[in-house]
Image 1 (spheres, helix red, strand yellow):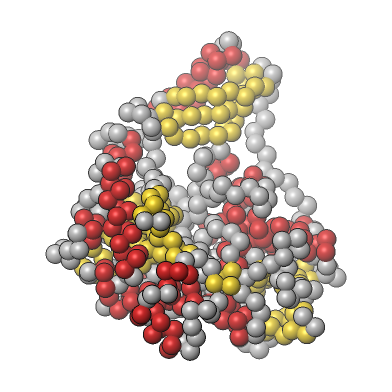
Image 2 (cartoon, helix red, strand yellow):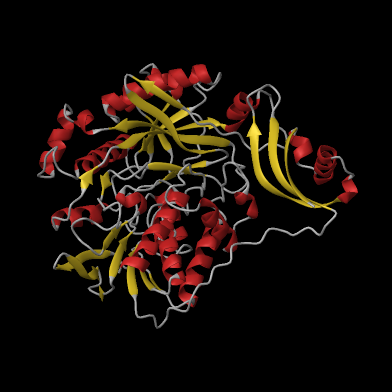
Length: 530
């Protein structure tokens, strides 16, 4: 007999399989030795009361052989001699999962990645962290695996409209992720484990006959009769395919500029901008778990916060328990910070993006931005206006930090009280932080919204508003500042019939899983329409 069971247990109980068997047996009126095994279907933490509980949903086997979970079985075909070929630009989650889906459909993907393979990227990240040297094509945003590879590996998404979430998670397990991502309420792989998984995906693509090329930065499209005939890379190579999947990510400003210069329709898109806030992890644990020490059975605590401040949304983004703040810049003299966590989330700090929505109307009265646009020989009506605003704020942050990607920072309470901090607390950001009045770095509407937001969050989470926390600028790559339009029924660009804008860079996804699902969706559409 098999039965699905829900339990609410103490953390220590939920961590002990023998105790779990006893609870399972008691809930169905049998003996523990009759439970041949069980599989976790869902696990979440309930920390709403003073006592923290673990909610479990299990699939139990009673008096019959236990069958462990099988990973998804997909028929990846040999496409080495396939007649159909599709160019995939970008090897982030959208590009990788699009390539896998194309192979499943018997189509050969030609995957062009501007950056380096996932292991070679490490040397460039080390140079950025320790020496302040950024490689524009190999950094936290660009390279095999995309931005997610070295920025945490969160797999949580609320979006199930683009595809099958469980299929994506099962594919990650197939390629080496631990199966706990299949049942955790907020699944997470960890930056330390993602490189091996990304490598396994690439090896699958190439073993099936897919083409996977690094250092292939796309610089031009050859367009005839409203169709892309070939893609040109920086080394003057031309690549031909029946369709082009554009999965370049939210930071590919050169691609947005190329599309605009070629008069291929794009649109300015609202995004969010702000800072990283970092607390000692122990403070967040104490607040969320209502105790002086979280103990061994609970993971480092996280949080999710949102507040309306005079019609502006202020919200946490990419919260990293036990994490590290990293420099996510893609160009010299532009400062961007992001966060990541290892799989164990065992660093002493908790960081989160804290950002404010940015819309067209916010830019109209900014004199410094209008001057900046003059330097770019464009105006507020440009489809690149949001991108240029993002760029301007990043440049201001770089100047405020003094160079070498040192980040401008203030203690939280000092920031909210317009006081330059006399000293700064310890911080995980390796290039270092510099005490600064962030009013000189952030636009006023961002700054004022964050101030009020932090105060409100301190009322929601007693102890959150503290000078032990440090505010680090600037968090600006939350999503793409440009949308590349596509037809909702064909997923093609309305102007270029074989161009398929995809995932975060085109404005249609946000995060690893939703990007992967969008990549699969586009590949499946190509399979039946071309």
